Amino acid sequence: MCGICGFAGQGDRAALEAMNARQAHRGPDGAGFWLHARRNVGFGHRRLAIIDVASGAQPMSTVDGGLTVTFNGEIYNHAELRAELEAKGHRFQTHHCDTEVLLHGYREWGEAMPERLSGMWAFCIHDAGADRLFLSRDRFGKKPLYYHLRPGLFAFASELTALLAHPGVPATVSALALRKYFAHGFIPAPNSLYEGVVKLPGGHNLAIDLSDFSGRVSRYWAYRVEPMEALPRDPEAQWAEQLRELLDKAVARRLMSDVPLGVFLSGGVDSSSVTALAARRVEGLRTFSIGFEEASFDESAHSLRAAKLYGTLHNQDTLGLDRALDLLPDLAARLDEPMGDSSLLPTYLLCRETRPHVTVALGGDGADELFAGYDPFKALAAAEAYSALCPKPVHMALRMLAARLPVGHSNMHVSFKVNRFLSALGYPKPLWNPVWLGPVEPRDLPELLAGPCDPEEVYSEAIAAWEETGPKDLVDKTLEFYARFYLQDAILTKVDRASMLCSLEVRAPYLDADLVELVRRIPHRFKFRGGRGKYILRKALEPLVPADILDRKKKGFGAPVGLWFHQGRLAPDLAALPNGVNRAWAAARLEEHRRGQADHRLMLWNLWVLGRHRGRNPQPAGGAA
Image 1 (tube, rainbow, N blue to C red):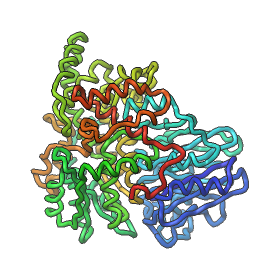
Image 2: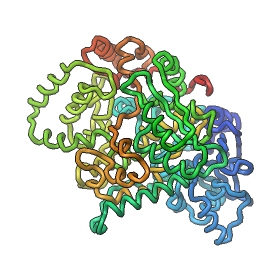
Image 3: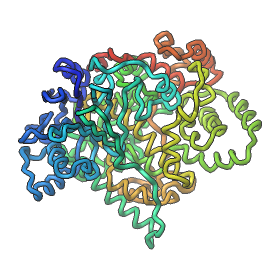
Image 4: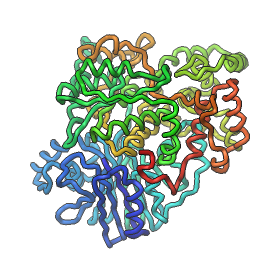
């Protein structure tokens, strides 16, 4: 796992070094630079050595110098691709480096190469003969890639702050991005916080013609739920066996490493399944978890039980209130781009406690999105019936009554869930899920941001994820929303930022390409059944995971920020917020929350994070260690 950056056109060695230095935490094992006189192209690389430690330095070029790559990620099928390429006459210089496979693979297959890759990646290849650059991002967007393109300049980097270190890249906050941030709690691709800076979406390639600095974005893959019509004779048994086998292979692929590795273990279904399979192959497997002193957020007892069951060497840390509050300012100041998921805090601490022991960790990310594991799936049937039967005046009256429920700050308190459920149902179906998840609903965005907010524009990416694949069952549409939208821009972004701040690589077996291909063809009634998600996954895991873990209610991974705002231990720095935010309106919401009159935890947390963002001047790496 690494950090990459570069430019073409405007720029020099000093700019390249400044960009690379901003993402040193992504690769503490070495820095590399490459410059090409024609079109003034420069690549930078920060290396976290995982595979072929001795000979995998980057940027890497072919022997003839015709192709050069800077690459962030892991290609899990690199050995198979190497063998195929060698059979076609390609000669490799490294022993088993996956980076070199990209160079020969591009020479052989051109822009079709990403379709053959299994792994996580963001890379840029300079093709001297064609006078162009070719960039790609993995299917789900696990690895980040920001860029800026205008006549005479193309610049790219793994992190926004690294890109901004190039003097030609603008740093003007986008008013639309602010609206999207408060609507979702994150800024979805292709948007970024700044005007003129773009995130290449997952499953997309970007080709830059260096002769005129024109760019062409193309999509090579998108997650689509396409249930098979002809079912096997015994679908549950067959799919359970196939899922178990594919997950086992996915875990095995992600144990590929020349450095120590471990597993994140919360004691839930997803992490326990990965641990069970990894423990079969790794003697003395290390596992890691984080707990909270606040009981409703704590899963410590479950992770300890799972660790004992699978015989792992378990490391567990507990996060207390004072320690958490001490960590928060430094963490927020080091964030690449503001994001409003409070589970960033325990995720970061988990990564920080893991890194002294291993360089690679496996996690359970992706299972909830693929197998309908989130609470909103439970609300869909009731929401559809309510929406059809409840007149708007009655709905508004019910919202007023729900707002009078006693406020509680425990994890998923009943008043929080009731108000969340009702909040979305005054809007069209494509907005239900984003409103359920978001910190500020559409009716309040104009108040917070002191101006009109067109929902079609603000929620455009979420609406596209909902509508693009045409008419489908409500559950299938929700599965696509989570896998195509929320997974990339919220979950995977959070894990990447938290882990790379600690120079830790995190791998996600549930996002294996072969496993995903099967899952998307399984009808949703085998995923969500009887008011519960992950039905077929639980069936598949019965030989591996005890029934009490499979049946345990999902808790989620968060932090008690609502309580902290209520107690006055945490408050957004309203003066530090960018222009366009209505500080007086935000201050009134903070006062309501402190008095226990309303639960504004999500909005306040997003305000707090945004107020701590440092833009071009982030806190130096290591400031939170």
